[in-house]
View 1 (cartoon, rainbow, N blue to C red):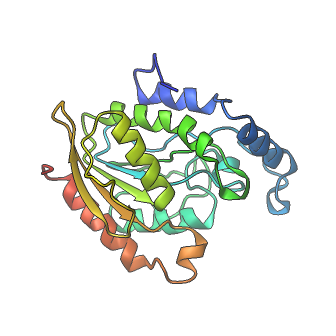
View 2: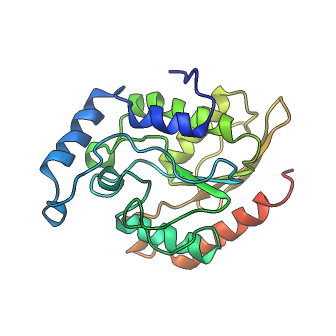
Length: 240
């Protein structure tokens, strides 16, 4: 799937929010929004695909996996309203990239500076596991997002192996020169790549901010801070 006729990130965000390309994901996100979790029974769930969040002139792009069923699928904003977001936004705040350390709902006053957050899959998947076909279909949005961010973006952080693999596939399809063999994901993995048109990017791997990683200590605040510090420094200098 190619994303044609979209000239701005605002247009892309609207296109994503209206997307119904993957029947399984549409059915699941809407069922979750209808049934709700007891703690949120009085809230109106977003229940749609969740667009990216952050300024159109970001130099740093953070790529997650997919919206959480009762997080972004409820609030309508990436990593908002769940514990993964609590970890991520606290770290972005410490790095000077977020206006506050918490993200509870749209309209909570949170703004981002020089960083945008997105995902290769924009709908909440059952069991947090999108299928390969769903990832390929939705990753077309990620490709267009990177194209629209091209004038400013310098560094991409991927949270987890699925996001890393999806990003590399998108970049390869768009003509970026990748190392061979294709580099495997690793926390702290850093790769500089270039495009025939002269663009350059640095890719950084980071363990996902999921509870599975943060509660077990596989990803600590210090580890996340180190990745963000490296990414921020790289984003403010010429790549290469």
